[in-house]
Length: 59
Image 1 (spheres, helix red, strand yellow):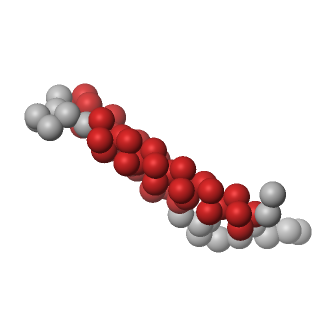
Image 2 (image 1 turned 45 degrees about the horizontal axis):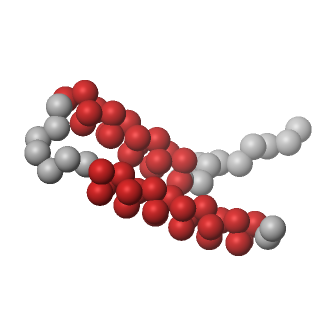
């Protein structure tokens, strides 16, 4: 599979999972533990979607 195709499929699946997660959230105020859990999930997704800040140097 080409890397571009794989990347597009990855983004589509990530969008589907995010939509499912948002639909599963209760409409009432959530407990602090649940809020913290979702914040950590969002942070993890944000960190994995950013490109590396600098490239490794080969000696």
